[in-house]
Image (cartoon, rainbow over all chains, first blue to last red; front, side, top):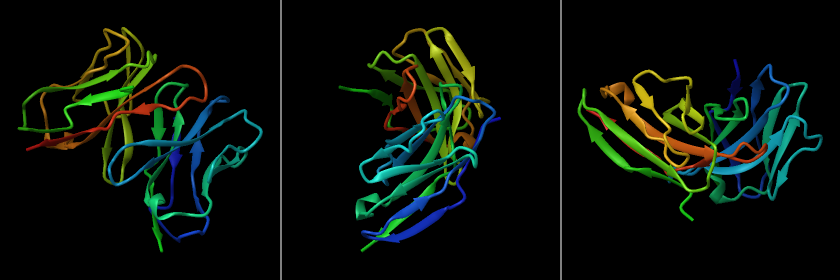
Length: 113
Length: 113
């Protein structure tokens, strides 16, 4: 069975610092996709970044990058130059045979000034 | 430009009542899915559909029914509401093209008394 593990319930960082949110996954599939979503206190789910299992380069989207280590089955999210608006819950997810998503339990990120 | 529309946004039910959470998407997406979000549990998959007329169970399907008679709509039915079904419910849709994120509705906050 597929599984996503996020071991950090909460993370604290100061503005302008970089932060890494951990995500490990378990799957027997050769082809899969990994996603990160942000959920601010308002509750909506905001897509941040995607990494395919066959992608050779780590994905980047602006201040977000995904540190993908396939052999270790990890897909950590790196946020550079944190901003106050980055304070939110962050979810790592994996697609289930390309259809629905399996989510981790999330990490709450708090950014202070 | 509606995306995924969920109704209602809030609902209070009494134990034993039934109701239907509505979900509609206007992006002609093949995949639709329902999740519930509980504190500390992340998002858990209830049911999903890969196309009209096709549905399947996710991780926590008990107490819920779905059907997909059209591409656009994917209602979630609570047959006999229980306090354990108090949660925030999200509907999502996605395409079968690899690497594309799921699009989420704004959620329905459901309380069962």
